[in-house]
Image 1 (spheres, rainbow, N blue to C red):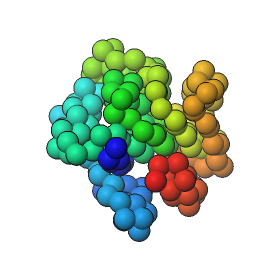
Image 2: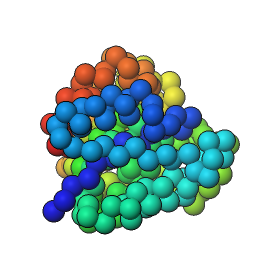
Image 3: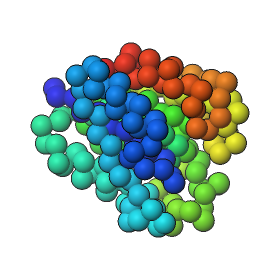
Image 4: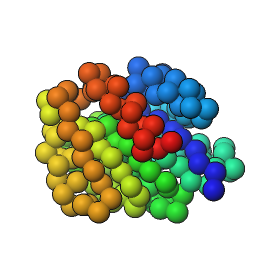
Length: 182
């Protein structure tokens, strides 16, 4: 089995986000490559969930040597990671989701044109750790609490004293990435 790693950024972000760059450094220190696909599909002003999933499909096709993936997904990128995992369960190893954008249709309907074509809450098939800020006003922590309660066998929620950006929790995120993914 050959493992691959990718960071899936959130809506309004990019592959070169601060968290993405920090995590890339962590993976490099451990001798691994962290892929940073651009999920702004078809463009940064017209993002679709289908476009994001297509970007992950393209990443997987570009690396046929990778048989299983571990993703770190932030916000909407967390939804994308979980959805791709639910569509490709045999290709997944682990997930680390950061304030994942579950139930996004109730909050972001005007931002995501093809939201009705996808589940609001994808069911993940692999071991998953969710890090969620208690002071997140973008994606309320109650969303991740409900998700973890509905998937008690393989989903663990880590609540932190932080907001949606999780910038006060980067050391913990780095630690969990190493422990859970590498």
